Image 1 (cartoon, rainbow, N blue to C red):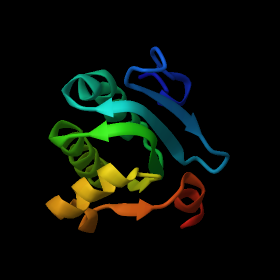
Image 2: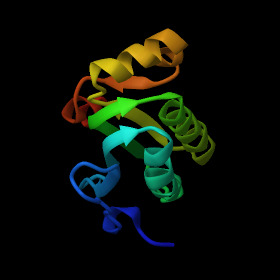
Image 3: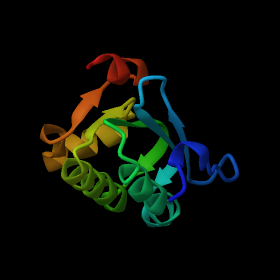
Length: 126
């Protein structure tokens, strides 16, 4: 399996993409960018699935560069949460923009995610 920490894949600045890195203590940071709509999910979904399989004790999904998220993106995040739970990996979402926070609130998904205002908060909350 490829190490997702070494498999950064960012397309053009206006398209969806994901970058991965490991912290010194083994946490996996997944930074998403662009729109998490159907096209965005198709672009970043497989990388998130592989990231969950990496065995990191903590996975933080940094959403601060996500411009829009619809139900496709929400479903991806929910699947990632379920997969992380099954793998024994703690999952935190960090830096979600207002539109995504509102979507999480409207759907009740805000109650199933560990939400942190910034990546730094997510990594420090251990």
